[in-house]
Length: 164
Image (tube, rainbow, N blue to C red):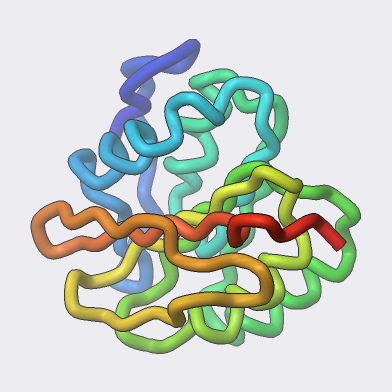
């Protein structure tokens, strides 16, 4: 794994040992950053289920002003809940890439929505056939992208909804 663009371009990243972490493919990573390329500069980026941290590092390399990395192999939902409760940061971009087919996004998505900046975007990487909620709070699926076996689902605030 390498950082593909920006200040850290070409830097090799180390993945955690073992089978508990499944790094996003280079194709998926490029696809995600193509989707959000106009929003990364100066953003606050949350990399949930960070694994190696490659997505947050890529965001920082591309000009994000701040990134938060969260990963807990066991009891992931509880760890995410605790981390979200302890921060007052509003995130411009959130990337969720939990273990596939475990319905973790269903539990985490409503918590993340409450931490979003007004024009924020939430991106979820799942297996191609994994079903996600159509909406969470005032966010709804804006677009779905398919890349090989992976699917990226982009959530945005519903039209006409104001931040609470």
